Length: 153
Image (cartoon, rainbow, N blue to C red; front, side, top):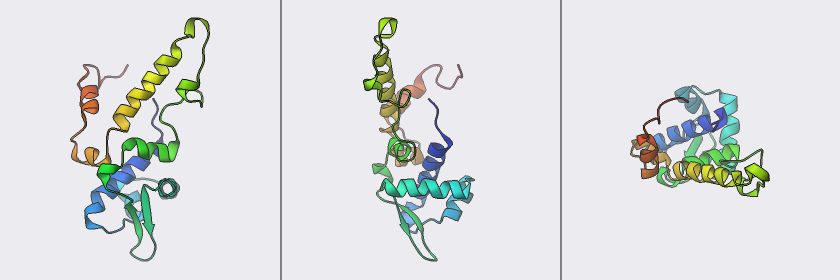
């Protein structure tokens, strides 16, 4: 699975907003970009996607900026990624269950659906608050407990 720069930047920006949420003060694009070392123009486009997905709200004015649209416990990493990059798992631009194969590959669709299910389990089951606290749900802890979880293949 390839996590795009767009998704990575979006999650990092959302985590910065979640960390600042206690104060209730909007966070400016300049601050978001500086804190996470993100390109400002790219971040502005990402924030527009997050606003359209109703994950953030914007405030205008001198003390304006962005706030989470709801508590960090209610925003999953998966929702953030979908907002900026679309579905979590596709096969050549199609939903896994829509794929059909013949011959030796007849059952390959089952593997692609299982991959999507696994990705959903981790990304939809993990909230921004979980990432901030480092207290991850069971699906993440189980994946991390795999003997080769941190090794390249």
